[in-house]
Structures are given as structure tokens and as C-alpha cells.
Image 1 (cartoon, rainbow, N blue to C red):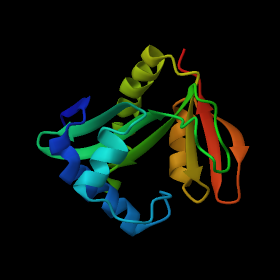
Image 2 (cartoon, rainbow, N blue to C red; image 1 turned 180 degrees about the vertical axis):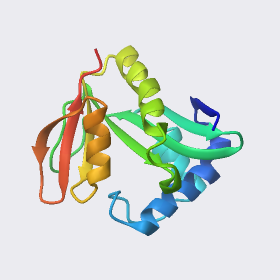
Image 3 (cartoon, helix red, strand yellow; image 1 turned 30 degrees about the horizontal axis):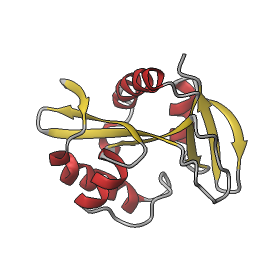
Image 4 (tube, helix red, strand yellow; image 1 turned 180 degrees about the horizontal axis):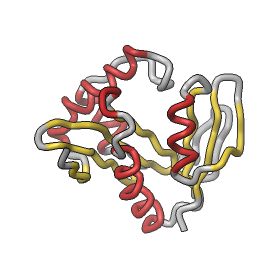
Length: 159
């Protein structure tokens, strides 16, 4: 495997949608319940209003995963509001390629971008049943700071 981590482009949207939709269909590891189309991938991950970065992991033409980081919304009116100097991370790796270092490689670039942007903490809120996701973020240096009925929230200080 020859892994390349690079900034996501709009022409990646189709493959990113394929990957996240496969994860949604399997169930249990993402809070997303509705499938994504290309415009949704672009607006939610590649170019969101509060976006900091979005990286893809590719092996040749095959997309193996992606990770997006965006600032917390200072106008969020829902539960569990976070400070505006925090960012939230979302990671999606092809289920057939787990445990191959793809998430770790993505997070290395994302952590650099978070530090450069001046992020205070990176939040990863993970579905409680997603024990693999919880272990991944724990291994990246995230620590628990909040638990909900369906989720566990971890944070990372990009120093």
C-alpha cells in the first residue's frame, strides 16, 4: 500500500460519498443516518463555512479514508455547545482497510492544521457502540471529557 495524504478536492466528492454511504449503511459507527451526495460532501466536509481542513488518504486512485476538521459553530443552539475556539473532527475510513494506519496518517496532518489554526481543543464525539472509534481517538491522545446517552466525547489539545 502506497498511502498519500492530501487536501480533499471537489473531484473527490463522489468517492468520499461512496465511502461514507457504505459506513452509514453498515450502521453503528456514525451519527449520520442519511446518505450523502456530491454536493452534500462538498458543503459538509470539503468546503464547509467553518472548515479548517479536509484530508483524504489515497492509494493510487482508490480513496481509503478522509478526515475533516471545522470550527465549532458559535451560533449552535443545540445541546452540548462548545466554545468557538474548539474544533470538531470527523474521520471515515474504508471498513475493509481498518487497522492499517490510515486514520493515524490522516490525524497527523489534521493535528498540524489544528495547531496552525490556533485551535484550543479538538472534539471527537463518538457513538457509544463504536468502540473501535473510541479506541482510535484514545490512541491519538484524546481524553474523555463528556458522556451522553448515545455518545462519548473526547478532546485533544494540539500543542
